[in-house]
Image (tube, rainbow, N blue to C red):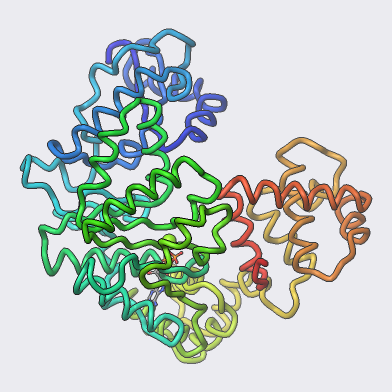
Length: 474
Ligand code: ADP
Ligand code: MG
């Protein structure tokens, strides 16, 4: 509007972070772009932040709700540059409910809604999307999914659900480690459902989005709109349902959503990084419901499957990987298909840019960091490599006396990982991290474990590290 620039972000963390670190910069940029001073207001609005189109009629209630929330909840939902200046004022010139630049364009058909009501654009790079499908990743289709012993059953079950939703396996609960193809299968299932019947109303979303929507509905006193949205679908697909861990009220709401849909014979599809009973602090009644239908696990791919995936990914990028090259990669990357894919992309990208042949030597050179962490028993060095590169700190920082959070936090994670995956004693680990004593190491481990219990994202990050270091988290 003339007086304010309103930005939508995914969650409260993003809002707080932007407010405390980048507000001045954003203000300057806004001034530069628009001329004249404006208040910068940052709002939590998960849907808008994903650049999603809200279908006009059916979603209106929720859309209105979240906008209303922005004006009612003040401090808790919005962050502004100058306190109080614009809080409470309705964001007057927000462009209806459509996000600017949303792919696929606004749905202008009113009641004739796109069957796929909603999905995470994070999972759906826009460049991959066709004009009428603004939400699913086009590449995540059954036909692009390489089937092997590790995922054969999960694949068959997903196909089965897509053929007769609500009838064969309900709920369908798919679990497995990071990067093993859960999202790929879930989206394939949605795509296949839509192929069979384009009018199927599918709500596809990440659990995080469900949580965010629920929280803003609570804040806005807008629960009925929320329930309307989630309970009027034919198929509800929630990716990464383990994010419900430790979120009691959301679990309760999900429980009710689940019951309503289930009783109406609607299909429910869930994915998770662990089996129902391993999700931390998940209510027993949810655990038992999740097990009502079919619970199936995707396992780590065996060597042959990895080879098949590598070949497929190479071909998809327009180049055949020579056998020895595929073998080398398959031998070294054995836990995560996303990493396999990343390796192919890097190798082929490097070769193409530099007009080189794809050879074993080239692969060793390009993937040196990936391979280094995988040889033999993980060492302190492997831990350091992961920690320094992820947090962008130096080994010297980790070993220094500095105790700012930017250093202490990675240091604690490093101590935890070292304890979990190397054979070093607490004393040795302490010495390694700048001559600290064993109680400091113990404290670090406790702190990390505690944060893992309360912060799902953090937990996922640590689990990924452990995975990369080749150890299964207990
Ligand atoms: P998850 O959701 O389990 O973390 P994703 O579904 O995001 O994993 O998979 C990570 C990447 O690996 C995706 O790009 C996906 O297409 C690819 N992928 C996973 N499993 C397979 C498979 N069996 N065949 C082909 N590609 C796969
Ligand atoms: Mg996923």
